[in-house]
Image (cartoon, rainbow, N blue to C red; front, side, top):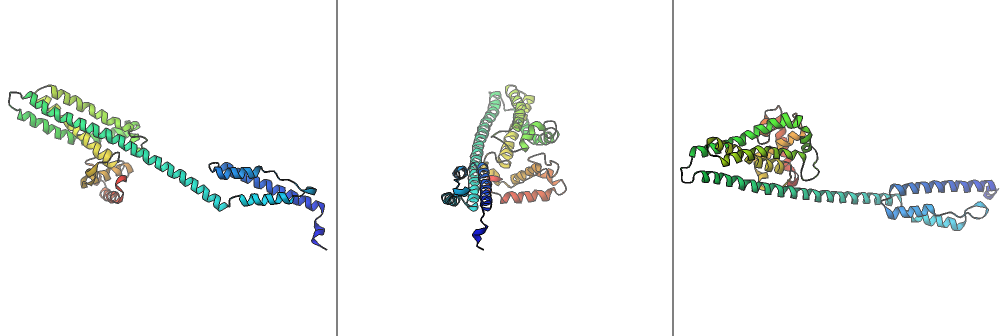
Length: 319
């Protein structure tokens, strides 16, 4: 008995239905794949065109030879799974590279903006402070003796105020910024979006008493005004140093040049990074005396040395 005897009309009908079922399932899969990868226009258009192409039944309900050949050609035009996967990966990589480039350009723009603000404010404040010191004593000593004691008191308090600001900043950082003022300071512990952050307001707040003290000391004579002038000058000097070391060296908001090569400032930067890592419950809260504050903790000296070595291995742009 030959094989052709098994091909009854009912068998042919079942074969045609099976082919139609598998063809419809294939078309559904292709259509879903096209929707998922709509960002690949060349592939999605091809698959959608193939999925929408009607099949022509042949005589006696079967599939004609012309339809079968067109199906074979359509299948041969479809990309293989490997080619399709490579196209998907290539598109994802291109999108990732584009985002990285945009992020790098935005970061460079932010650093340029903050660098301009830092340099402009530093130059302006430095010239104003130096000019105020000169004219205060030159104006008040016209035709008279130089008040040596007043000058000494002014510069002594300027130095004392600079050191005192470190202790004030340590206390305020712990008791205020990480407590009742956390809603403002939190912006400093999160990724920054833009050249500035809400935490920068604290710099303006500290500038108000410095300006007031220097203004009072500039327009009045005597020992008390001289001391006030020195206190305002010390706060100003601390603020400038804090901006370059904290914002520039530690958080890389702008380049600081040779400051980054000073060994002690490298310890300061490493200690402040441990503050952000929160390994010792926020310690150190100070900046310039942060290494000493950290070394007083159990295991603090070892962690500080580890962080210093890690920073030395990093590229300069990521310190």
